[in-house]
Length: 150
Figure 1 (tube, rainbow, N blue to C red):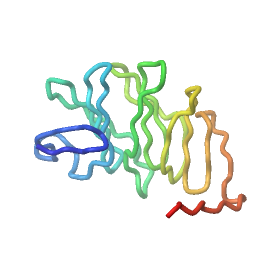
Figure 2: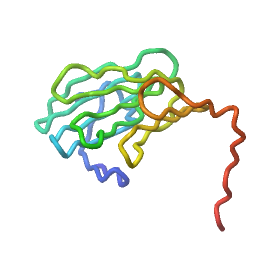
Figure 3: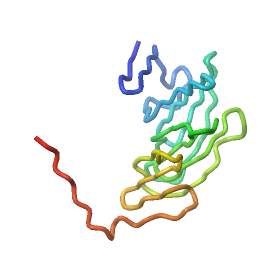
């Protein structure tokens, strides 16, 4: 039995011998609304596991270079998901067609939602609010880190 503490997720054992594409898992998301388990791996692979243990695999991102599935989040007030890879953000409606690209952006590092439900996506030097393709270039700004209190 394995435990990922910050995700509150337990599992016995999953690898490429029993359903996964590889041993490299970058993100895990359990959708409490429908019981599906989403497992994001390297090579842009997204595995969707039903409560019965059946796995459906989607190849999301094969643009070259690093292309791991690094984040999976439920959209607020919706049954849809947002899935971030290193090079794009995808939208997915469980039970329907394969995930669709919503935003192309290189070197994605993280994503989250604003309090009003708009997605924020950050890369090495860009910030996007929403999936309309408009980004803010952060390389022009002189950002400085705030020292942590000791």
